[in-house]
Image (cartoon, rainbow, N blue to C red; front, side):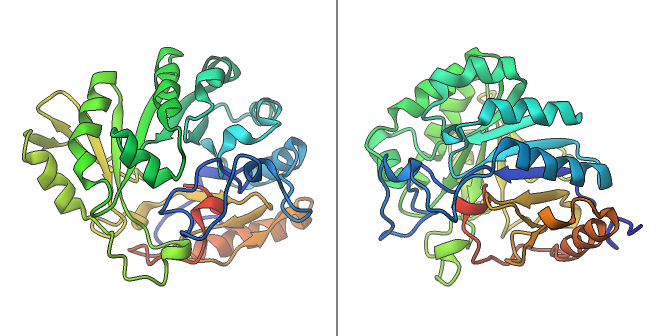
Length: 324
């Protein structure tokens, strides 16, 4: 049996599953300007893009889980709340023996689903929100009604979920929103994480002129508040600080403060292709190996070896397909 651990001691302990590659938003860091999207398109799939059924996903999860015990599952997209069989899938994953099921969403449909998700066992949710200012938020998401996101966030908090907010900070687009976002999160009593822009998908071959660094994010916050750094937990993507207004914020700084050295994440896209690293577009479709544990272990070990030793280098993989 192949040992599922690399020479840096890294293992796969968290699985992120992209349930579908469709989304009702078309955020500028996710898709290019000429990308066409509409509410109808968000729910339309070609024959080659049909989302996997819950039983297909759960079989894959169970096979991987038997070889490399998974501590948690994160359901992503596209937009996972568009996945028609979300609740049956959650139940199937729990039946495998994985109770820590999390979700990453734009929260557009969260108001209607938060309580049901919590009751189904989803206790933790990451919500993307790139501005408090409605005009700025609409322009980044390319959606005319992001007001529903705020209602969704409040519904998740009221349902008892552990809520984290995620904001991708871009120069000249929403860097003015750092303080307002921090204050909004603090008022709700939730953590917010500011993300450095990643060179993925349509941004991979660009100069990344929108990049806004960890140092600049910290400087913006320190212009109004004092901050104190907190200890980083193993395999955590963000470094956290406590601000003098009582808020807690993190920064996911792939470029400035890499965290590849103890990454424990495995990803699966909506076609059932698994990826060991966001910096490597090589994936493996593992469905045909589910009944051959030795071969499956070899494939997973190969994906583990693709992890960068130190730093994220970008990829042609699209966040819309692979999930955040």
